[in-house]
Image (tube, rainbow, N blue to C red; front, side, top):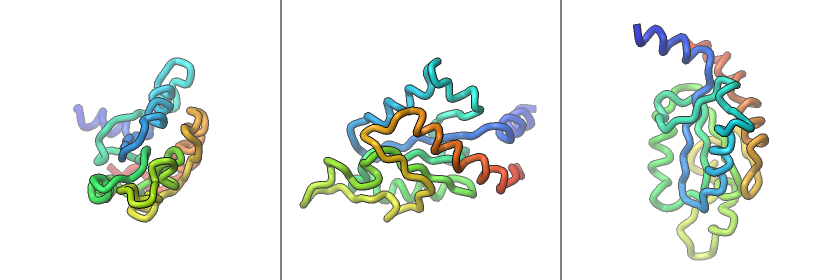
Length: 148
């Protein structure tokens, strides 16, 4: 019974896994703003959680640090196909202010996992994040066919 209900909900929604690989948390705050009544992310059937095994979209925030290089690849490998990755903010795209000579920041994140959409900004606005998710997720999910 529970599995059947889960399957129905899964077919009609987008599940997002938020991964912060090191940074100032500015992008994370903007993702949390999406959950507020102003943007109400869940009205679009988009749910944020921390389980990559059920994620349709992986949101990567923060500059990739030494500790996160292998962890990020493991998280990516656990996500079901098609694996959709959105790089949020300047940090995963370029390392931004954290990418200093002699430092332990590795940019861009696309050196470690394939990125489908980049959302520049420090931090990007909530509507830009929502737009990025909605630009790639529905097509990829339809392509998958939800054969669960």
